Length: 408
Length: 138
Image (cartoon, rainbow over all chains, first blue to last red; front, side, top):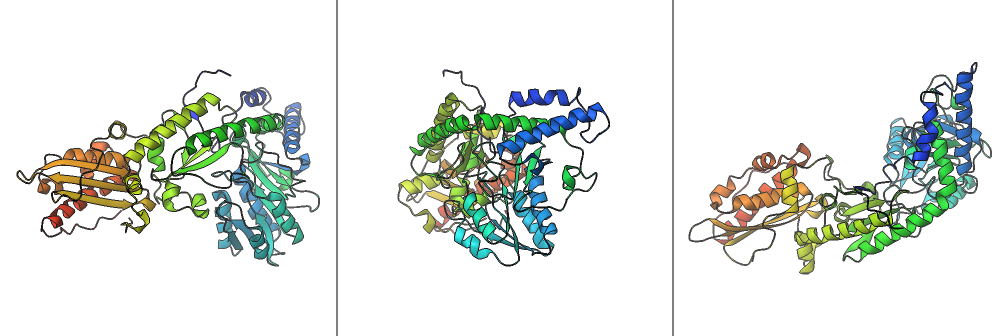
């Protein structure tokens, strides 16, 4: 394929994906022409909307091998995280008050767990191993007679590391504990099957899979076991009483279409993206002192997180951010100046965490863009190392860790 | 966050990147910051002993674009100044010149610290007492 290089290049697909034009096309009629409220039972406007929602529910359910009745539409993954964790915590209060999660979860999970601690709940935050995977023996050992929920994400947003979801759900089952997974980065990218994976609750969102922003879904198992969550939004009793609020019909139609496209194209897309990702990674690993963060065997096909030692991530991005959009684990702009907590949880020193870039490829990434990115990143790293006092010290054999740095 | 044109210019064409011979008595070296914090600056001055003027200044910086620009600008300003004049360079002058946003003020503070550290190194090497800088908070 000889396509013209399109700039700027978007390699931040873990933050959000562009919408697939086919999704927009499916949504279009539901703004002006078919604007009905899906809860209007007494006229055709409502029926048309309800029919569209029902169809989308089937499309979503099919992608994850669920029953359509098990799909609760939400505003996105964050709401799903809140609803699942707080909802289970409240619904199963008589059974216990202990939740197990891990330190590399998304803030929507971690902060929800912190909220629960404030209200008197107990939360165990499992550390991860240097490759980003949790230790299953540690997980099992953390379960007490008070444990009601295990919340472990499917694929990590920063490193792409995929947890052993099947093994986690087995442990949860064995102890009669519910298993919730934030699968925002995984659904639509790799096969996710709530039956085969033994998942009880699962959240994901439209805008990470070429669908619209502001819409997502929470899967809530209805059989073996029948799971219930306490509603966090009170009102008209929509979505089987678990999530009130007028349904976002165009958004839901878009989510459904996005799921259908992923269902049909995931296999070839994953192959194409992992080949491009691997090529990008190999192209950059020719640089000295360059490290891939996280497990590379159990990893989302479109993600690579790489540290370029002795170069600071934000300074690095500045070398090409006119043309290439991506993320860094460095946080020079944040008030705290703390680098990525996910990378630190993997045991990376702050220096390596500050030196990291996250590459998130997507459906519309081209080979030409990858070639351009390899060159741009390599050139900038080389240029900045020439400018880096740490690189000079490294080259002269000075032990940087032995220097007493004035921390500020 | 958008960078100012001046930051971009210093980042793209940094002035005075390099290394002076730190063994020379008329060279002062300041190394400030920490890798853990995401920025390290090394700033060096060479003082012409006859005129007392800073004849050369070099830097190397590990950090964001604003840190690189702050140190690049500092080396430009140092050249041709006396050591005493150099001591008067204030971080807010750098903030103003580069249009640094509030979250990047620490980069300018680091550059000021680097200037002071280089001067102190020069002073100690030449038998002068170390200047006690007011403790900057950042």
